[in-house]
Image (cartoon, rainbow, N blue to C red; front, side):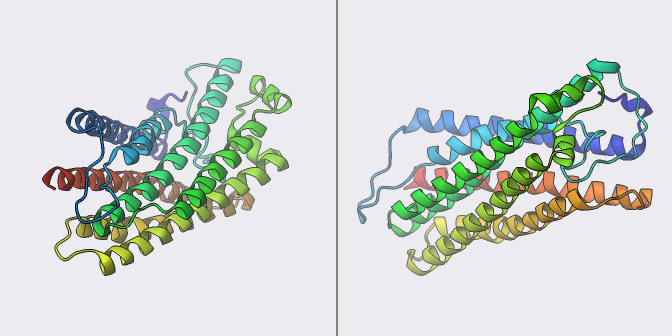
Length: 317
């Protein structure tokens, strides 16, 4: 791990952002857990509906994704080692930090943190995508009386989630190749170096990121469709309508913008920054790190807020 007292300001700032995100994500995890406990204590079953065959959906399905999602988000930034790598596609080399441990021990710490952060990110991405999908589906169900998610939606989104998990684990597993991992005792080996130096790992990782872009785009389009459905078929004064409206207006454009930055990080795998100025490198580092972290936080917050609002409307019904 780096000795932060001797780090340059950008590294200290990146570390501060990581700590902030980890603290906020931990807070969201506690809130999500409390919502589950409260829900189970009050009404572990479903809610009946008089005017429709589709029973009201509670928030437990959303929490199944949200509770582990917030936990893994906090863990991801708690184990980040940003003095070594900024993103998979861009390693920030402007650090002149001195390690607290040396030799093989230092290299092992770097490798352990890097691969832990990557597997945690894969699981978090899966949980966040699932939470956005199931939350919007259940709001639509409660607001229209039409059973949601449909069978087709369940099959398709299950396939999407499994694709995220499968391609992510495949890339991560290839990066753990024993021959490559031997480098851990000579140099700071990490998932980033595996992607950069091993063509097979790089290809599978790019496929994984492409699947994430496709999956998030598919889910965001489904959220838009459900919002239109609720707007056209929901009853006037429906309490679910403003919940899904603010969710759609904030989350959908944020997901699309985040996908643009994911594409940028993929492009950076093939771009050399050796000729860039130090200022340009620092600007890119803060752009990719800060936006990605806070985009995830905002989406998690919107799902959490929507889940809380949905629970309140159920209690009032």
